[in-house]
Amino acid sequence: MNNGKLMTDTTKKILRLLHPDQPMDVRCAAVLVLGEIGSKDAALTRALIDALQNGEAQLRRQVIQAVGKLRIEAALPHLLERIKEGGEEAEQAAQAAAKLGAKGTRALQELMSKVAPGLRRYIASALAAAGTASAETAAVAVLLDRDPGVVEAAGRSLLAQVSALTPAHRKALADQLLELIGHKKESLSLSAESVILRLLAALDDPRAEAVLWEHIVPPYPPEVRAAALQALGKWAVSPNKEQLKRLFACATASDFRLAAPALVLLKDLPVSERTVPEWLALLQAADVAVRKLALDKIGNRDTAEVAQALLQQIHHPDRSLRDSALAQLSRLKQGQKVLTAALLEADSPDQTWTLARAQAPFARAYPSEWREKVFAQACAYLESNDRRADALLFLLREADAAELRQRLEDRALYWRKKKAYETALLYLRLLIRDPSSGFPIRLELACCGLKVSPHDLAPEARTGDPCLQQFATLCQGYEAELFAALEKIKWLDAEDLYYLGFHFAEQLGQQKQFGGKVLRLLVKRSPRTKLAQAAKRKLRGAGLE
Image (cartoon, rainbow, N blue to C red):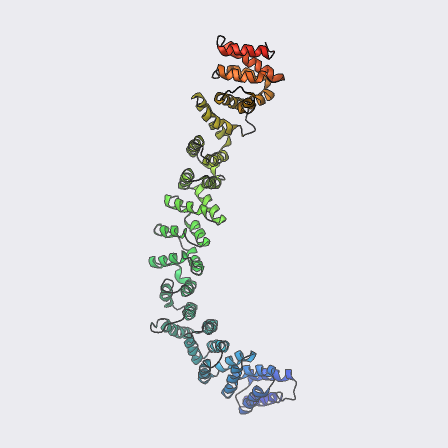
């Protein structure tokens, strides 16, 4: 009794501080204290309602909170008016009214249809956050509203209350939500379905699992499916065959809202033999992140199916995906096979170059059988004047430059012995692109060029003959050994020697001397021929006799 009297006396003293002659900060502080310790007596009720009607804005906002905490029903009409007027006080007034029990809930529900959309969202949020049974039931009913903003406002407030609910309260709320989403005759909006799914997941009710799995596939719209996927959480730890199938279908969707949450759920799942085909299908997904996950999961499986799927990634616009697929392929035996097959079957030089550059960093580790196969194809392209040869030769050079050089030399020698000098020249020209190519290769090139030369003795023709230019270079750089080496070449005939000697006999200095030696070699080898007689005349005419 004494405590009650003391509290009443204290309240009366504080009420005096609400008088208009008190400073504003004192009046606001008094209202704050009354909201915490006050009781619903007549004097306090009158004082607060009076301040709510006539007080300044700063004081009214404090009073609105106080009447909500004290659940003063007499203030309800004034709170409703504040809501109608909008502004800063409307949201606080709605929250206060929602705390006034069933009477406040009914009043807010009636007001919903009479105010602007923005104010309706305040009311929906307030009902969901009130913490009373009647307000919560009303908030669940608000989820049927056709305004997405109203639905989201109610949903956010309900979600914020979930952690504070008792198990019994959670179950009751879950019952309402399950009934709402399972009511086939009542068509829910996209926002409503999404909010309900999120709430069911937050309530952690076991019955939510079946509902969530059902909602991740068509005919439900993408917005609802995405919400269900995001809510699945712990229920996707060990999915069954049908559930896995649904997850993979979502991951391959072109809509990122579906692919992203499906990707998160699949990330921690193990790969089994029976799910490999589904993982392979993810390598065709629209989203790069999904493809990368599939590559990480099954990229190390050395099978033809995986290798073919990885091969398709090397043309993808995303560089990191291309590089990862190539690195994986280069480590797999089947990967090397499909890369080689694609390289050798490429339709155009551009495509061949793409595949060749892609494999260049790994080609050094490829086996010798691979180099033999690629070299054979490169030779076929080179001899048919197909520009795809350049890419293959580049790749072989990256793999083993010394081996390629030897192979080209052997090939040139093979064709020269077959007297296919034009073909031999193809390989010799490749060899001299290397500045380190020595005298034997350069002499071989000049001599094969001499064999295919038209031997036109006209000055202008000789000036443009590449084989004569090559001999001139050799004469300058290898004067001492040039003629000695030429003497040993038996496959040059009299016509070749006459053409060569004739040209250089007309030059100056060491080139002139070289021409004389060549003409005398011709006379020595074929003394009784007409060309030998012509060579003698040229020697006399050039002063080389």
